[in-house]
Amino acid sequence: SSSGLFALIPDFVGRVWPSPIPKGARGAYQAMAASDGRWFGTMGKELAAMWGNLAAARAMQLSSLGDMPLVVLTRGLTQMSTGPGVSAEDVEGYRVAEDEMQAELAALSTRGKRIIAEDCGHHIHVDQPQVVIDAIHEVVEAVRAES
Image (cartoon, rainbow, N blue to C red; front, side):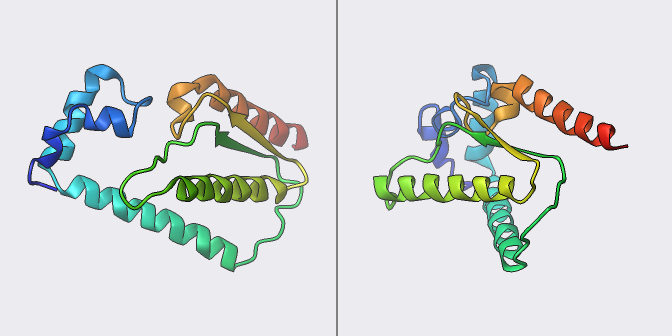
């Protein structure tokens, strides 16, 4: 919203995204969220596209990636929280559905592997970059070994 409402909520951005945004940058993010309604609109469009793409992939009923090297990184911490219209059951249902989708994705390849970054939220690349680096190296090395 461009009403400035979010400027009135102390550390709004830090509460919504507690780990990936350094404390020194939170003020700038909060100002952006409070002053420009396009920010939330863009986030909503990105989420809609993401869920739409997942639904489309499921609709295609992709059943196998053969023996393609694959590493699926999964966050260990659920960042969704209860609030108006969001119950503890909703949060748990979301966590279970997300977990099932991640497991399904890893199972698409006979060489699929799932790594859960236990102490990470959505931004694994920020919280534990070495986990991401190691996963990329693992896939690259597997592909090189085939060549």
